[in-house]
Image 1 (cartoon, rainbow, N blue to C red):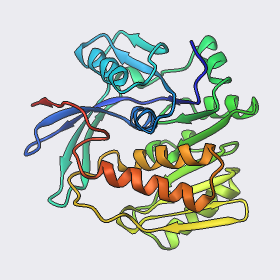
Image 2: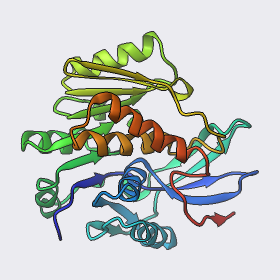
Image 3: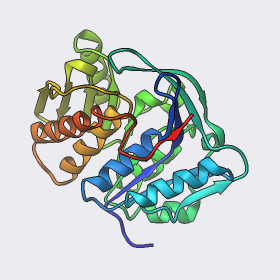
Image 4: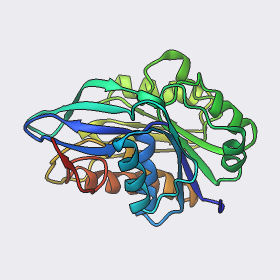
Length: 270
């Protein structure tokens, strides 16, 4: 397997948009980040698990069609994860049901870890490993990021050792500032809090940056935060200033808001 600049590890799912959208698309934090990085011209690999079902085949084919390396995609007995989504009139999403399928309990093998330790940057999506992968990679000096907002269980929410910690506050204000401070005090070297329609805030070393959203005609916000992460990371790993990283994240997220799902793809109609 060739050396990659980025690897994304963890969740994948089929986003099943309920009526009136009535279509299914491949998604999940780790998948969306990997695809968006590839769309930005970055070499990216995905590490995760899918089921021995049609959705698993679809997920692999979609990743490959978008230029993401899938040699470390594990095919397991069981179902591919899926999420049932309702959409509000303004394009915001409501997760009404989540089935984690074979993503639950997924762990990279020792051979997987050997590859990950040679990647320039690893992004971790949803994983129920109690932070084991984060700690292992950070201890080996690997640059690592994680979106803690996709991990609801307390045992999976640590940020110590992260090069970049991402979280979502929904709006600017005291809660967003508290989240930013807590991630930095918890051991993240850079912290980013996205605030929905109110933009994002970030802090890295002596730098602080705030940014508003780009105004677009919103069709769907699913995956916008994941796209922000991809745009931010591509700039961050290139050692661009924090403000430029925020702008790159904003611009990537804005494009995602103009279509249904985390990235452009051919949907399955329900």
